[in-house]
Structure formats: C-alpha cells, structure tokens
Image (cartoon, rainbow, N blue to C red; front, side, top):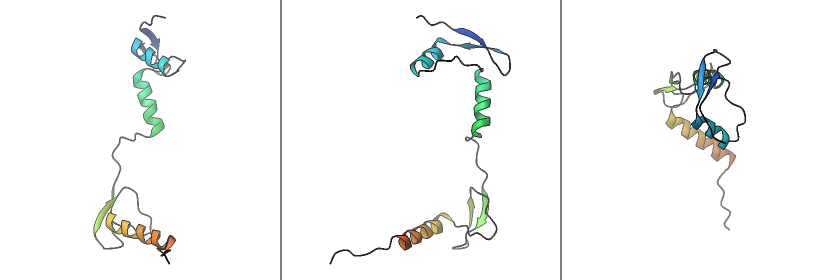
Length: 109
C-alpha cells in the first residue's frame, strides 16, 4: 500500500492540515488505526490543557527552615503550623524517621 500526503480538516479550528507520509508510517508502526482529527497546533493546545503544562517553571516559596533557621525556597505552599525544612535538615529528619521505624540491631551472637 503506497502512502501519500493527505489533507485533513481539524475538528476544532476547521483549518486544513497535512497528514504526511512520515506521520502515516508512524501511525501504522504503532498500531494506530484512526487518522488524526486535530491539527498539530490544536493537538498541542489540547495536550497542554490536559496535562497542565509540565514544562512551566514551578512557583517557589521562600521559608525559614524549622531545623536550622536558614532561609530557603520550597516548591510548595507551606501550611500554617507545619514545619518546613531546608534540604540538609529534611535529609536528617528523613534518616531519623527511618532509624525509628527500622532500628539497627545486631543479629550476630
């Protein structure tokens, strides 16, 4: 079956777009049976809406570490009454929790 470029109409914006032979080969190789119904721009816009634009820079919040008092930034909005730690203090807290859950014991008698 010889493939050729196809002109399709976008279901969202109504603009014509080309479904290239390369794209058709990709669809066939991945077992995709339906032709695209949206132009590349509308597909990208829809993908961004659905997945929230993960390539956007995260908002950072400036806080004071509850462990050592140093000013640091975190990628989440701190809640009132909850401690927030810098990387170093967080790692120490995490290790303390691990040690309390899994105490080191000597099994050699």
